[in-house]
Length: 365
Image 1 (cartoon, helix red, strand yellow):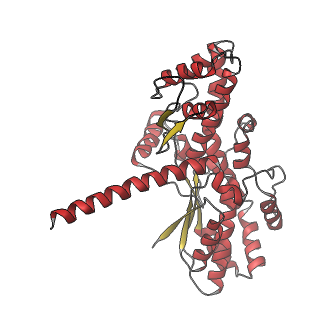
Image 2 (image 1 turned 180 degrees about the horizontal axis):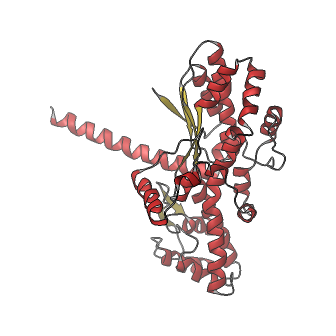
């Protein structure tokens, strides 16, 4: 009755996941945002559980988290920074123009030059000295939760990126919609690759063939693994990742309420979303997202994974091989930002604990 969280922030997660599962200890891979990360770690779970099954160790429930909202946040910041850079290309005084935008967005800065400092929205503060760093600071989610924020639209029109406010609002709304679907697209692809009606039987045969398992052992392994969409930003992030098998949705109380409100207000029918994870989306969203290299890294496979999927009989012909490689896991934008925020949060908590312990010790003397 215990599951260990294993951060997929480095290739070590592959070994740790495999070895824990081989001992009958369930894992929940977190700090994962990409198809290639999640697929590689699911394969590690399978390998570890196969070893456990052959030794007579009972395998247990385990999870492959998809931090979709944190992928969306990172991609939005990348898109915002790109737009700001484009806007500043023709500006005579780039820092002055950026400073004007920063003030409108609420960045706590007092002058265009010098060092800027402000919270990122990821759980840590950022210091920016160069123009590039200042652009990144202004792009952080603490100041720009939506690309359609009026102050941002006004800036882009004023700087000539768009011909009119109407054009800007339309194009930014379309980009925002695509980015808002990016985390869901990753979760849907991972689930389809392993647990869809057409692919799950192929993995059953693959496990039996590769590891010499009985059908019952292979079936138990496949049934024990759930995709777990997390870090959701919108109610539809839950509805679009529902499935009747191999899926667990965990929700914070405020998100639960948002999901219920959407159901009540729009009269949604739960039966329409039983396998929403298999829902097809307009290709225009993927086409839009492919403007950004980090989405390609999040959505595609790696040559190593393609080889395994083909061995299992999974059709991955159009899925690409430009996905994030294990040695790149720690340097991916969402990973860097998340781990920095988590580390900062831990250090603050640790300092408070030490301070409290010292206070209690002093009072007891």
